[in-house]
Amino acid sequence: MELPKFLLADSTEHPEDIFVLHTEYPRFLINLKDDSVEWFDDIADENEQELANELEKLIELAGNFYDKEMESYK
Image 1 (cartoon, helix red, strand yellow):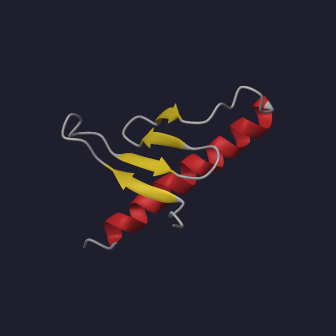
Image 2: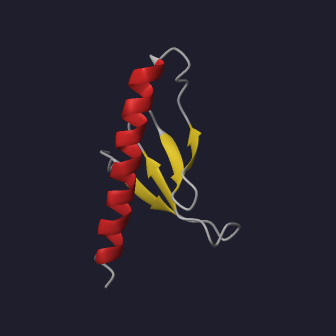
């Protein structure tokens, strides 16, 4: 099965939060409410600057994905 790059996620335990799951390396869950990130892959060996640049791009893409998904509900 081929997974989409991003998925929306929610939880009744956190009704005010907006989660986007990134399914490709580096896999993570981001809460768009406060941009907190939970990593699923060990990224300790990655180049810190490259990782920071990649994370910035991925957070922007996650936000864009969310905005596009919400537009489809209007």
